Amino acid sequence: MNEKILGVIFDLDGVIVSTDNCHYLAWKRMADEEGIAFDRTINERLRGVSRMESLAIILEKASRQYSEEEKRAMAARKNGYYVELIASLTPNDILPGAMDTLKLLKQRGIKVAVGSSSRNTPVILKQIGLSEFFDAVADGNAIQNSKPDPEVFLLAAKLLNLNPSNCLVVEDADAGVQAALAGKMRVLGVGSACVNPTATFAAENLEKADFESILNA
Ligand code: B16
Ligand code: MG
Image 1 (cartoon, rainbow, N blue to C red):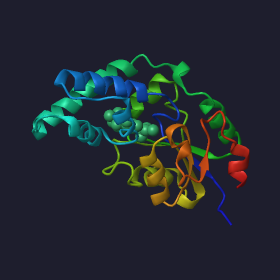
Image 2: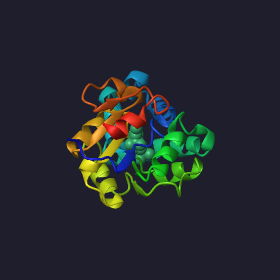
Image 3: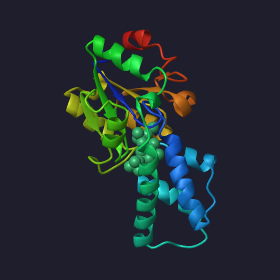
Image 4: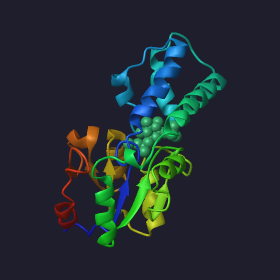
């Protein structure tokens, strides 16, 4: 029998808030300035992946080698563009169904956490008015290995004082689904990950997710 779900760990970008387009626009601006081909298809591969690993994927299309110093400067430049864009996020940018789901879980006494690769997690949570909402936040600032490594989700479970087997992860990225499973957690795939056959549960988005049956599964 499955163990009871006592905590739900939410990925941030693409699950709680749609910052994915801001990431795309910021990388696109940087890539255009460098004359590197970059489009939304390549962008799909950046979901859930850390900043430097995202840059490495973009540089697969570059016509020359970049030094480590140049790479750090490019990643910082992209982050500057990204921070400019997320400065205009408001609570209205919370994705459909996310707030109702969070409230339902809290009412049921289920703990809620964030498990995000993003180093900008504190700024994003502040912009959307959820800084104080979560019982725990594990993000890119606190980990060494980003998704598909399970580190961020294992840290979130630890901060919630729960065993991984009592946690459910909600993810929009294949790398995140892989990370949750590697951490021995169940996972609900939403958005791009709703067609991932390895996810334990799937829903187009949080509005369509049937948490009543997921919690009783
Ligand atoms: P930053 P998530 C991830 O957030 C994004 O999906 C990914 O595209 C981004 O590269 C990564 O955060 C790092 O973000 O540059 O802000 O540190 O989906 O794990 O919430
Ligand atoms: Mg995501």
